[in-house]
Amino acid sequence: MARRLSRWKFQGLIRTRKILRALPEQIRGEMVQELTAVGAYGERLMKGAAPDGKTGALRNAITFKLSARQLVLRVGIIGKRLARSVFYARILEFGRKAQVVMAKRRSTGRQYALRVSAIPASRYDFIFGAPRNATKERAIASLRAAYTRGLKAVSARASDE
Image (cartoon, rainbow, N blue to C red; front, top):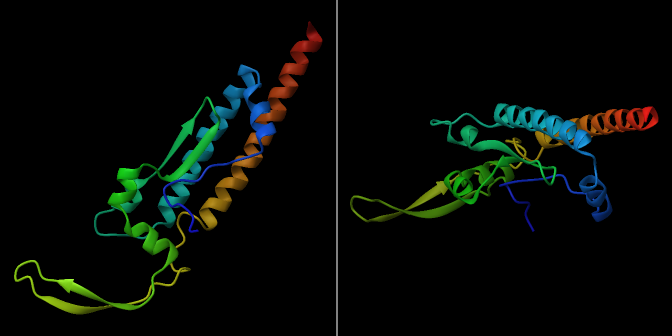
């Protein structure tokens, strides 16, 4: 099954999600700030790697969304309507075989054969390739740092009391 182009998110085990839900508000706040920074970084990276087009619609479609309550970050083309409007992003990302398609003229209604050239899957790499991996690595490092800072602050406050 092909990967979804509209979004990707960091997923963990059920136990990890329970731990994240039980975090104190101070640590949650720091993690939300870190995830926001990572989301902006990932968005910049993906927009920079996206191919130039005539309208720039593909670059404008790339965005990030953060659910602060669940600590879930989504970066990419988010939303069904937006994904449909830039449907060709999937073709550019995953490639296309060379083929002959039947096209139809709007004015006369006549059909004709049109040769479509191949697009290799490795030509464009703007959502699932290197930008995604770099964003994941940065997110893991920054969340780990935020978690340890928060734990130190909580333990220092607990030892003072």
